[in-house]
Length: 470
Image: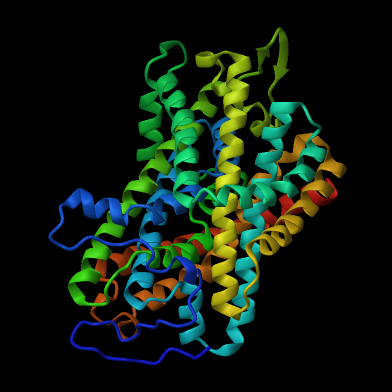
């Protein structure tokens, strides 16, 4: 495959606009975009989708695990981190979409085009590690769901998740739009239940004054709190989503002229803000209900038996209790498990697509999706099985949180090239990031990198505890 050549088509046009060697080439330009004269809603319907698909990863079992642990351990004190990480995600995903629209290249391909050859392999390996960490969260979340639904031991449930590659292939035959719609309905259902509890059921309503104080007066009291905060950031601003979004926006048939590019940039920005705002509301609701149901409580009565809570509780496995006041214990357990399984499976799809993007972009290797999927899943299952065997079934939440911290540690490897490329007039022409996106984007890079460095000792301590038990 030939390297892209530099072209300059006129004032304001992007210097780089490549058309060959494209990841996910089978969907490139597959969705028609109406003319500029069409109404707002008709155009919005054409452009909406990439950010919604990406946002599924912001509501995966990793997010559920970190939000639950944050609410159960610190009440509302980390709610500001959920808000801040969501705002950072919006900024970075907007930049990712801009790169794909303007240059016709995804982030991995742009890194290959503009950085030295020796950077390709380490960048690819770092991103693959992030994808495996994400898949570890999907494995654990799906296993908990299977355990709740069918009472299958967690270790066997983890192994069963290896076969979801067959489910993935069968679902893909219905088309991505159908899958997105089904998953969205399930997630909206669980979110609706949370919000009914928050705003309608007075006996368990949250303390809105305390929530407002937590948002207005942010703070991190100790290293354990920093560790969970890093996990929330890693669960929200996911490295592989920055690569995936820049590829997905190319599924729209966008002409490379100035007016068409500006229109695409505007509608994809709206798409990103809308989709990720929904993700924020759902994650905030999970944290708030965990704070209401678990924080400061000794336990709860479930089907006549008392379930004790402690600092070491496996919150993801008792999280269905947050829905029990509304639905009853049995129905809450089923609905929570179905929604958790749905979020894990939907994130599996985006993880597979992201894996194709980074492998083709950095290394120009192409594998059948089912082979890629199976390889990634096996690499995620091994540590899950080992840890559950060694530590027992009560280690899911801490493994979930650790996987999200690993994602946060990988973020600088994706954020720095993204901000460098999208801020470069040589790459983006007149569409290079303006002052706001440059300031906000590089601010995200500095803040997340600083938190990674500050929280690294606690991360290493937790790894030691998980692996060696002390």
